[in-house]
Amino acid sequence: MTSTLENNKEIKIQMRGIAKVFETDELETHALKNIDLTIYAGDYVSISGPSGCGKSTLLSILGLLDMPSGGEYTIEGVNVTELSLDQAAEIRNAKIGFIFQSFNLIDELSVFDNVALPLRYSSEKMSEQAITERVNECLQAVDMTHRTGHKPNQLSGGQQQRIAIARALVAKPAILLVDEPTGNLDSKSGDQVMDTLEQLNKNGTTICMVTHDPRYANMADIQLKLLDGSILTTPVPGASIKEAV
Ligand SMILES: Nc1ncnc2c1ncn2[C@@H]1O[C@H](COP(=O)(O)OP(=O)(O)OP(=O)(O)O)[C@@H](O)[C@H]1O
Image 1 (cartoon, rainbow, N blue to C red):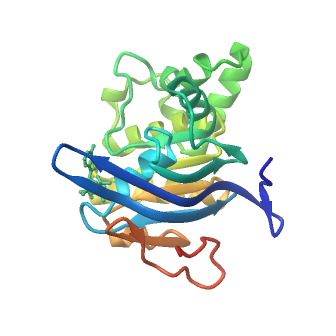
Image 2 (spheres, rainbow, N blue to C red; image 1 turned 90 degrees about the horizontal axis):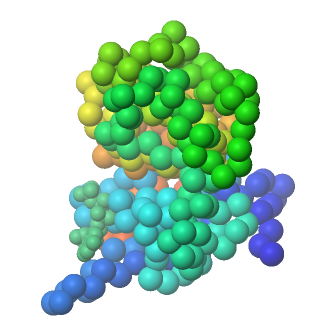
């Protein structure tokens, strides 16, 4: 059993020597090379780098949407390196909260029901009262309790993204994986979404975010830069990411 504590800090995510090779008929692409990464509870990590450097590939592997070609990956001490599709889906639902550029809300459902959805589909059954309490808690965390009965298309883009954040939080994931959260937003709404993420992190949520925007990448405590599938940046002193070897 892998320990999830290091220097009294809880390890949420640990990658050792993660590689990803895409093979097509003529070409082998080494999208990720020997990635070593440790994310502790409460960290706020940004991943940036030029187009094609491997950001989406890394986020997909972190989110169990794809499997690595080599290396070892654990989430909260559970080795998730080689899982069946069903096992990966189960752990993904329980431990990962996703926020995408497109908000992916269901138009026919109210804000409340969108946020409640992961709890209603969870293998761990909850009472309606417990669901209501948890959904309201998450809507409060993103400052959206005043729009509970609205449908997504009655909200601004920034508000929709904040609802998507509440939905990602509702099942108490180990980590929020965030992919270009402001890509579909004007700068004012983008700033509000980033403020929401910052506030959540201050209250203890662990976040790993891919962004092209250097201004937003700089908001994270730990800023990783990828180049040609390798982590470039040496972490700033005091940061908790392990340097790639
Ligand atoms: N399914 C695939 N099959 C073959 N090659 C792939 C596949 N997915 C990604 N790649 C290659 O792997 C490398 C990394 O791609 P990835 O999408 O992770 O980059 P990225 O940093 O997210 O780029 P962008 O910022 O443009 O979204 C690229 O060279 C890409 O062409």
